[in-house]
Length: 156
Image 1 (spheres, rainbow, N blue to C red):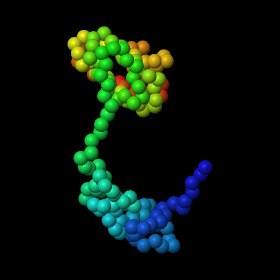
Image 2: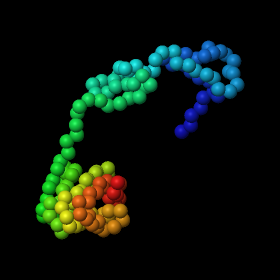
Image 3: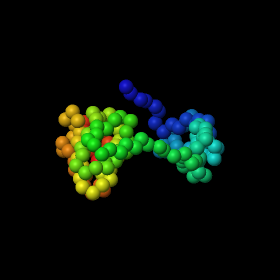
Image 4: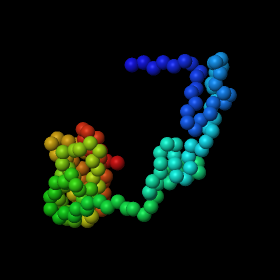
């Protein structure tokens, strides 16, 4: 695949004006183009219409707003437990248990927390490792966030 265009040519589009105006003579160097209309307003960002829960600052920064919150699945366990794909937060409420991560799904995140004094073990399944190790020990009140990268689990 190749891409070809005449050098030093700027084609003005909607919302842009070429300054100086295009001519049949291609000037050497960079052709300046200036904005003829506002690219961003409080309700639009370029050709993107901003809807509910989004705002655009006068500087053109798009941001999310509103009072919505994220609700995650919470699992507390006092026995050995294998995480489910629907889990997010897994809290160990008993010393000495093992939490096993399922076969990884690319981008899946778990937050595992040892909620007691003592230690728990976190391990992968199917030969998948956590930071290149078969298991990880969490001590008193330790927590760990892991994400699957397509090959193994990594703490973040």
